[in-house]
Length: 299
Length: 149
Image (cartoon, rainbow over all chains, first blue to last red; front, side):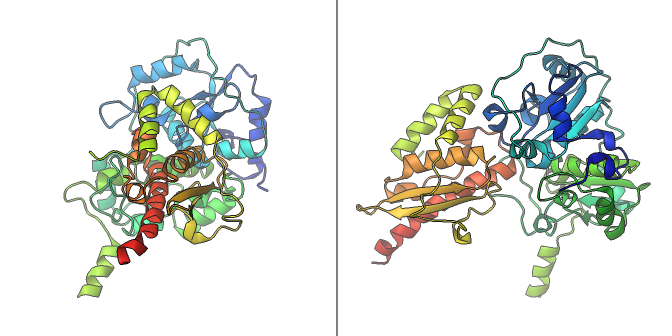
């Protein structure tokens, strides 16, 4: 069983809450629970009483361009789910909170610092037989006002990532080792997340996101275990300028959350363009150990 | 465009005609109707060769030969949160069991987008398409002896 959140030695322990904390705040008017999943059926099948759904595709993305909501869209979303600027948003979801941390990351682009993640995500809540409902709550609209989205602090774009690579600054590829090595490119016929080239950005370390999670209950590992992975094994330092990426930015937002909040790294950015952008870019530098091994075998 | 086997086409067309909310509710109802593989077909631990590659809901597929040479398809979904996988298992099991093998073998894996919509993530799509592909493979395998003859 994992330790209590306060005993895990995190740099900013208050960004995580336990399922028990959530159970005790179900009626708290200053807290809004929001479920964010990969599986589009899950929220409708049941959810924490009072929780709203924030759907990644429909609610947080620009419907036309590959980008996120601008200020007006974000304000509209927050008003719809009855969130005020001082409301504490507690996010949770499936897949060990991949999409919840993605939504958390986006909230930070709009400066909504009053946000938390429910440790262990949806599955932990369900396994503990805590209450669920199919009732979709309705909240009075708020008058939420957001600042313009700030992409400078936590988000990295293609050209910045290229420069980062050229300067040999630390970069983490959080995908599976098979994807990193270029053995698994994408699935045939999959329309949205494919890439024409496999491999990884030269110089990127491979630290799969899931290493930060306790397999038995989906909670985050404690700071000592996390430091073993990131600072001892992979030699990252809390003062480093780090970029994390994956395929579309969801898994890397999970690692971004770990590095920035649990380990207190001062400068971590998520390259949300990730491999679906880099692996399709003309002339982008790529390391592909799988292809190189094949070339050597053929020579 | 080649149509799907009749029952599957009917079910898919019904889902396509619904708005998103109603489609989700129907898929949840289908997931609730999911019946895991009977013990006479398979018991824990399930053999790895029946596991759907890439499916994070830990889905398994089996087929059972009927008197007329057609197959009944059975599924297990080990992740209790694997609702989409359960819905798809119900759809494939109810609409393809007993269907002509050559038609089952030709069901396109991307039928999942007609069922669930095109917003599926890559990971989710990979698993669900893997389930369709496993069913197709079962049908193909059953067809093989007649091809060899």
